[in-house]
Image (cartoon, rainbow, N blue to C red):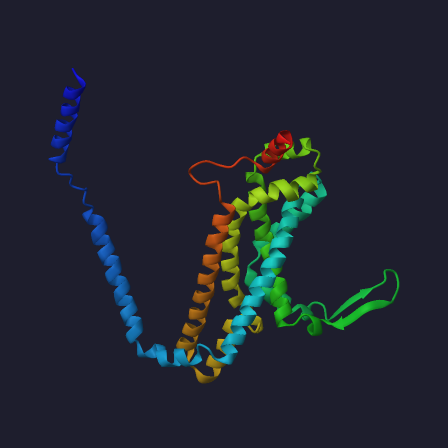
Length: 310
């Protein structure tokens, strides 16, 4: 067969293929389910929009009131401070759990067991009523009656401080497990390569292991931050001056419970949306080179390759 005959045959085959009508598979069940869900969602939204008990005018009136904005500020502050305490403490506890020292491992495991095993609300109430256990905070010189610090517990551990202690110490336990999982996800060969380059274990952890573990750590820590933001509402039981405390104080006086709860819900939704956007970009930043197309070589391998090239 000549080249001309082959070309003509290909054209004829392509023509026959063009005559075939391609009919996509129709998923009628999916469309029916989507229609039902959309109808139910639209009905719910319409019901809420027309419900006079929500008093949308009242919602708009209170949405940007001073006491609400102050509550939002306290909520953000509690989230940031508690997550800082939780992240730093979580790294320390995670490293202790991975330590070769059995005492450090036991202490870290006991810490995680206790704070994950007791409800956060119980911990918040405990710190809020710490004065019932210790009336005064005293710090003195051992084996003497001298006190360097001797203050009333209520003067130091107020509602905000109690909220920070409860949220931060509780978050350490969860962040420790997230960080530990991220460290364990890094190939052990990275540690061997780091030690072969003359790095100490602490240097290898800071410069090699933790940067690589961030790809695994960031997504769950983003979720922990969002959960922390919503968990701040629990400090209302001790008058923590957060957003929920602010609206509760007002609706206990004017009895506009639903409108003010909607105000709080709208602010929580707005803050969570901002955090979700930040989490998305952080995941993209630390996940570069680890998509379906392949993965990057480890930091230790890149460092070793650079030293060989030099």
